[in-house]
Length: 171
Image 1 (cartoon, one colour):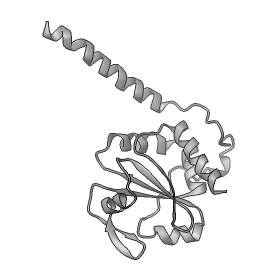
Image 2 (cartoon, helix red, strand yellow; image 1 turned 60 degrees about the horizontal axis):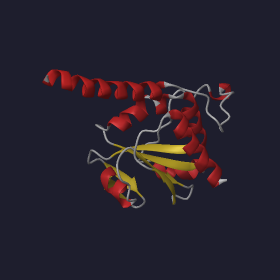
Image 3 (spheres, one colour; image 1 turned 60 degrees about the vertical axis):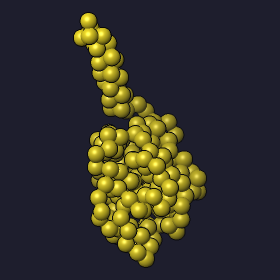
Image 4 (cartoon, one colour; image 1 turned 180 degrees about the vertical axis):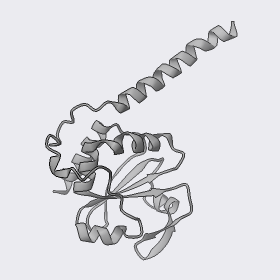
């Protein structure tokens, strides 16, 4: 009797996980962004992550918006972002064309440059009152707070809409 009662919750959990994974792997046409001709960006096969030690220098050089992507090595939503959203060609082109992007882990004690001091990724994360990972902090070209994308997994279409929103807000 106990085994029969366990089958329904296990099947439901399995079906839910399968549904989430299948949806995250789909790549419908993205509204709002002109990604029809990405042939000019053929060299963009992966995100051009900026080293955190050079992050602020690069900001000045590119004069773009910047994203600091906070993640944790064991975070399932972060793993989904890395394996799905950040592998999509439209996301790669948008990030490399309009943003400087740095990846900071909150799970280790590596020191990163922040203005005139060295701090850990976790302290940097808390400085901006972010809650949960993965979270994204958006800075303008003068290193000022511009916005945030709260914790969680964002499928490609949702993530592109958010990226476009900040691009339009800057202009």
